[in-house]
Image 1 (cartoon, rainbow, N blue to C red):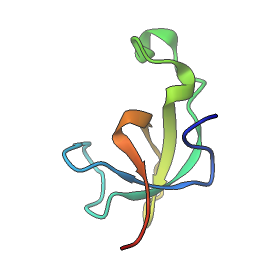
Image 2: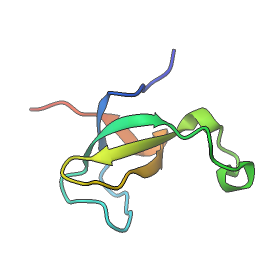
Image 3: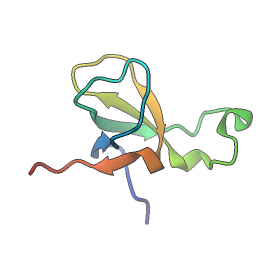
Image 4: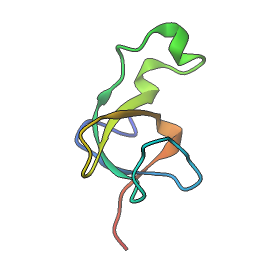
Length: 74
């Protein structure tokens, strides 16, 4: 079973830096980034890279699933 799927609300884990990422770190998964070139993936599998859209942003970004966690309010 996959950990994430399109439509899931996620938060980028604390300590992860990505230029242009908003401070709130909350995003929705748009899709798996399967269309990435093999050399850009390194040792990662295509299904481990998610394209996300941060709330309030218009440009999607890509993250490895290890940097994502399910969003839950506390």
